[in-house]
Image (cartoon, rainbow, N blue to C red):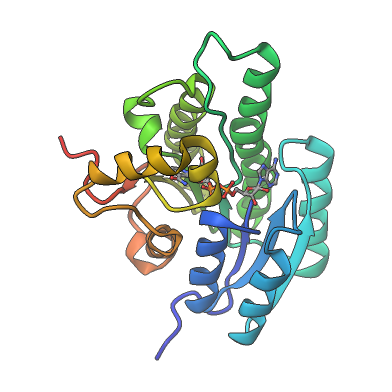
Length: 251
Ligand SMILES: NC(=O)c1ccc[n+]([C@@H]2O[C@H](COP(=O)([O-])OP(=O)(O)OC[C@H]3O[C@@H](n4cnc5c(N)ncnc54)[C@H](O)[C@@H]3O)[C@@H](O)[C@H]2O)c1
């Protein structure tokens, strides 16, 4: 069996658990070597790395808060030192808070904007610099169905970041095109992760699940969509948003 992503170097941010972990494992399964980034590697980082090594791929754990410029700089210096190139960037690190606008402080707002959006800006800028010298690369932004139609309640800061990622995706797609870099977004629906249960609770998740034709999603399904965009199938796709949501957003 040919491995479509053999020899590719991929950075997945926020990959120590949840959707990022699912993406890292699928990209490795398809042949890529993986840089696992997270600000809390003690979640599952070592276990993800062990699974990737067991597949015969190279991997490296780099703890960094990707919302902080100096940490992103150090992260990309380590990538250049150890791998010399970067083929795939997946901007996945992100979080939310189950608060409506009345409960959301400026500090909450800035925390979510920095975690979800500033991180995407900083990592994309560093990656585009590298990819421009290679004249090749793929950037995938993990947005959300919330970025397309707003949140059902609260999460105003989160919705702003996830819509913002779609605007960044289309704009960077134009910048990247003459440089051989494609930029796309994946918009997951409701995916079973620690973040989902933290922000919606078990009852909330059950209610949401009942409204999805294909039920709750798994991180692996998001990984498979990312792998598609990074493989040959994605070679003429840029500035697009791929909905991976079990039918929750049918129009
Ligand atoms: N779970 C869902 O239903 C769902 C739906 C749509 C979109 N998403 C998006 O998918 C992405 C992953 O979400 P998840 O559900 O797996 O969440 P999660 O909380 O389970 O995992 C997120 C990971 O990102 C890491 N992280 C957070 N801030 C970071 C930072 N500043 N620097 C480095 N790492 C950081 C966390 O430590 C954690 O390991 C997020 O961008 C989220 O908005 C999730």
